[in-house]
Length: 47
Image 1 (cartoon, helix red, strand yellow):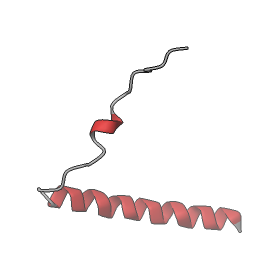
Image 2 (spheres, one colour):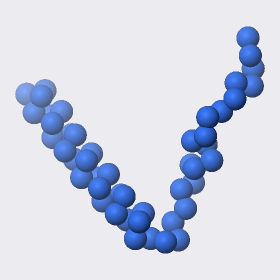
Image 3 (spheres, helix red, strand yellow):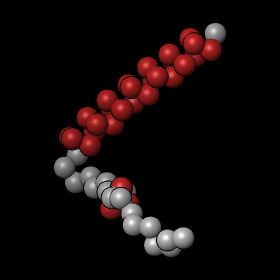
């Protein structure tokens, strides 16, 4: 039962990702609000 649920979840996630990617490609005005925060951050408080 767990395996079946996990497979279904993965399938739904893949479908969502495909729809999301298609939508972002088609919408030329869309800007990723998290693009800046994806960069590797420096450790500001070294210990």
